[in-house]
Length: 193
Image (cartoon, rainbow, N blue to C red):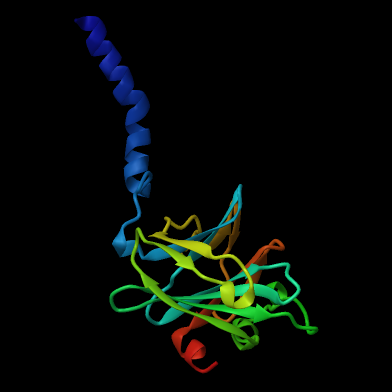
């Protein structure tokens, strides 16, 4: 009996501070509807592109590079609508002026010419099949997931491809390797394109 009491005391002494720290920092914390939504797109068997949706006042723009003779990439404009997530998808034309992954500014990427594929809506938990047959490519699947807890010091939104994070400022784009880019824009900027 005294042995069990001693074991319990050691467990509380050793693990108590860790449990308090986990409670204070929110780890593990499951992301819910109050944290927003995000998209996940499988780029390769071992790489997933994570793109936050943003809010009604701000949107995130993702670019997935395609090495095709006609299409240079797929642009995903994500915003939170009143009832659901809205994603405008455009297949970007190949251009002699450069690679859209290196656009640098959201405005440049939003003005890049392309073929509109459509606007799709869904909620957390939905998987959307986006047909790209208009541009001769197979369909892609976008998974709408709860937003992840931010690893950034300010708790702000971020994009990710595996362990590579990007947190562009308003109006900026950040390349995430050769396969993807993440951009941030105000809702007003997206409507003026």
